[in-house]
Length: 79
Image 1 (tube, rainbow, N blue to C red):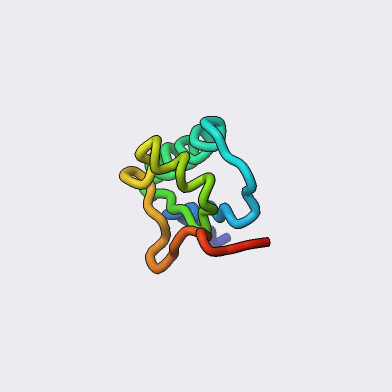
Image 2: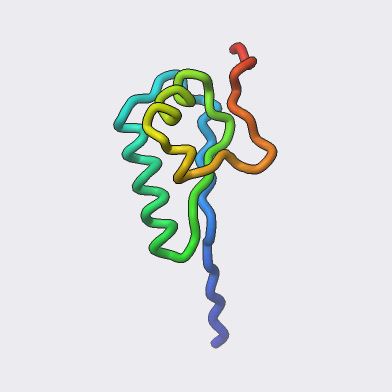
């Protein structure tokens, strides 16, 4: 029987539904990045709301895990 191997090289975390984030959220994102690097890949962030963006900025996360290309934070978004 033939076998197929699938290699996942990127995890993208979408923050569009996040209303509040603190250091526990940073820990989750960093674990995802660590696991993806162990598999030879990486992580990216998208649709980061203003409060979470401030937390990521303060922690320097965007130097380690980028926003997806073409993505901006959801700064102007209201729900």
